[in-house]
Image (cartoon, rainbow, N blue to C red; front, top):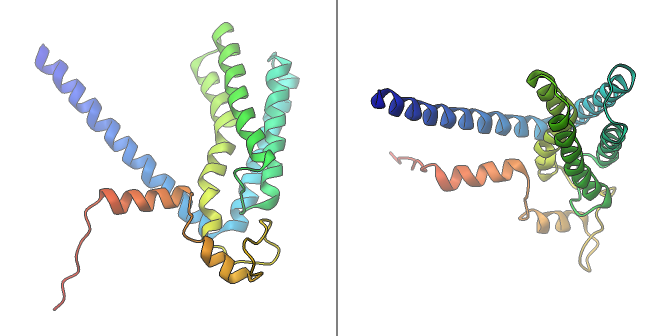
Length: 201
């Protein structure tokens, strides 16, 4: 009896490790795709945001969700559309980005408050959280690394730093500061996985 119980915990640990590796590999692949195809990524995220707004309109027409939950959700999606105006350039300290993060937490609070007081099947709760709360923020989170390898332009929204007004030198001086998801995975790959040394023959 105890041996089977011990094996069940061991198998659960192994399954969690496999799921974690699969999610990390999937996120790494998505970050690579977003870096490679930024224009298509912007269109996809825009369409996902508009589809989420349509879901909220469907909640207004067909369901009895609280108005504060719906208004806060639509405001969050409008904020995501404002963030996408400068895609693939993100400024984490910009007011729209900060408002989007605040609305994400407020949306989660309102959703947990509503679904804890009114019974809905688990599949409906997960549908709301997946499609209306997590889909677009996760896509924006994955695309944070998209501006790391973009060529510099004069139309870049960030002001040039320093005394020299040279776009290229300013770009290369800031290249060492990478905060995206892809940079995190590359750092984890270099620090955790063993490095293979090439044999010289």
